[in-house]
Image (cartoon, rainbow, N blue to C red):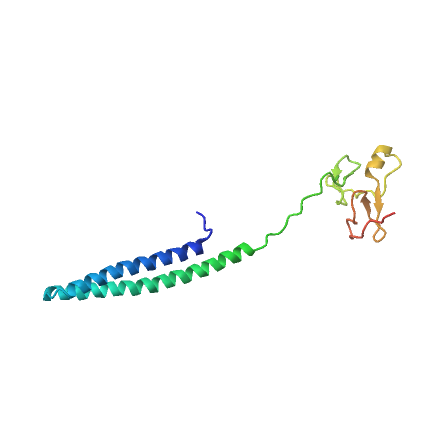
Length: 170
């Protein structure tokens, strides 16, 4: 069930209700007047009742339609406020941006770059590459050291993962 434009729909139904009550009330009122002018005593009581119902229906139609129309205005105002709510923008990842490579522990477990201890054995992340690492592995994991806190960061990271210091340009 859709609640789009509910306020506008309520206001439209209020106008329809008002005109329906006016038309039916006028018909009853005219019928009551015609009965009253016919001159028969029995019909005079019925004509007064019909006249009263006709006028009452017109009054109830006006009051009811005003209430319904006012409610429609309130609903329309809330609908417009709901449309103005700003949804948080989701920033898409930059295309073709390589993710920061992790580090491999001595036990053989691959760990994410931001983790400082191995998830398998608990050994601390090495601060530097050892001389036994192959040259291809060294070039793939070579990064930069933060001047502020000394943390070794991946070459793909623009700010230090520990303190947030920006990567030096040279």
